[in-house]
Amino acid sequence: MKEVHVFNAGPCLLPRQAIEAASDALKDFKGTGVSLLSISHRTKEWDETMDECRSLWKELLHIPEGYETVFLGGGASLQFLLVAMNYLEKKAAYLDTGVWASKALKEAKGLGDAYAIASSSDRNYTYVPKGFSIPSDIDYLHVTTNNTIYGTELKTDIESPVPLIADMSSDILSRPVNVSRYALIYGGAQKNAGPAGVSFAIIRKDSLGKVSRHIPTMLDYRVHLDKLSMFNTPPVFSIFVMSETLKWLKSSGGVEAIHEKNVRKADTLYAEIDRNPLFRGTACKEDRSLMNVCFVLSDGYESLQDDFLTFAKERGMIGLKGHRLVGGFRASLYNACTQEDVEALVACMREFEKLRG
Ligand SMILES: *Cc1c(COP(=O)(O)O)cnc(C)c1O
Image (cartoon, rainbow, N blue to C red; front, side):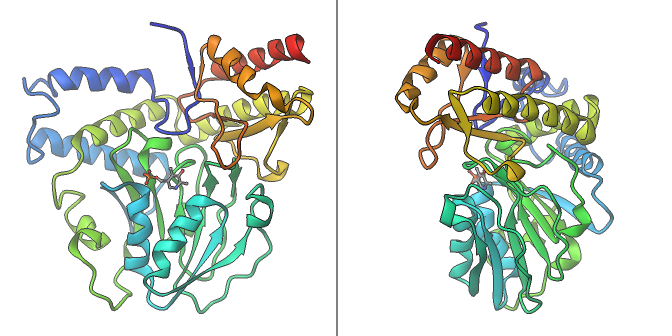
């Protein structure tokens, strides 16, 4: 196979081990003689996968008693609506740190008085607002911990006097999280936890049931909790691959160990961006994301944009084009991306500097 280095922002690179387990299971799921795509989800073999997946989440993130993890379809985007449906009675505050945060807020606006408590839109979301005070008369505060498009990250678990809800789509399982600070943590799996087609929600059970509206069955977190994510047919393939991805993470030392590796990867790339006169980072240094590294060409070199992308592509670098709202480049260093991948990118940037600098 062609040697490549995958920096896609999502769906993400997945560990080889998970891909291989999935391709085996496609042919024969756990020795049943039936493909994973045709098994009944009402069997002992499937229940085992589901249980294993739930308990791996619990173990890897040290999820405390009183919480349960559910797996859903519809992506993080559908959960924007579920959050408001299940938690918004009158008033909710959202930290506006980018497009995903704004989309979450938009869904809530239809259901109550939802507003942005602080925003970094004044500088194209290149930083995370700080120093805002959290009112006590709101139903919840919503944050987006990693801003995939802009490469900023809220690295602390806020201490909040009201229920704290977080979209952790793109940094879940990349660093330790104090789950007990949150009423709900949710996200799409395809940025760091698994393939597309499934999303997760880690729910503090006693945080539900506080709103008076009628909640449609499929939008009610309590239904999915009660039915252990099996109210309707779950996305079996996606859940299987997620479960294998979590197994790989566990065998690689868990979240604490991968966090150390992620810090090293990000440090390596940011150091090169800061050193190389051709490039500059776009996110404010103290808020730089470990997962999505955004950079552009320095002043005077902007015309080299397409040249660098072609140059990098010829050297096997995949997925470096920045999001259209930021431009330039974005290297996503999710868990399965290795230090070697990052070193290859750095070597490529140095080579480009020699040629064009
Ligand atoms: C990608 C992304 C989403 C949207 O996820 P879908 O599963 O595609 O709906 C939401 N929030 C963040 C932070 C993301 O990176």
